[in-house]
Image (cartoon, rainbow, N blue to C red; front, side, top):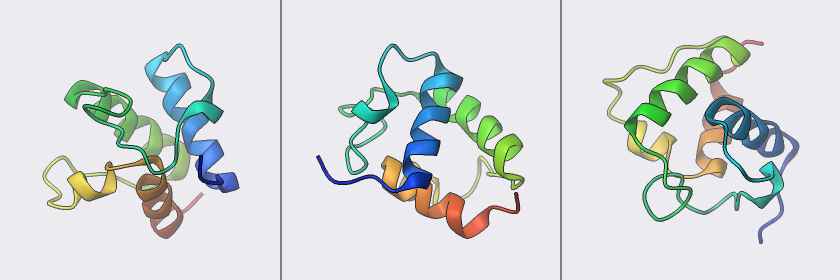
Length: 88
């Protein structure tokens, strides 16, 4: 499994906590897909996760952002987006 950064570990914990997943955050491969074959998340999970990220890091994720597929493609991509956008 690729090595996680501190922010990736933090975001993985937020994913598990927000979505009540029955896994340890450290089990999330930073490069594995979050949706479908990866963690198996769906669009409702994405909405819940976007709200939690907005509250935790102080920026808004828009449902109509054409980059959402890339942003939510993996833990690593999501963490990089958080790092670039965070205000908290």
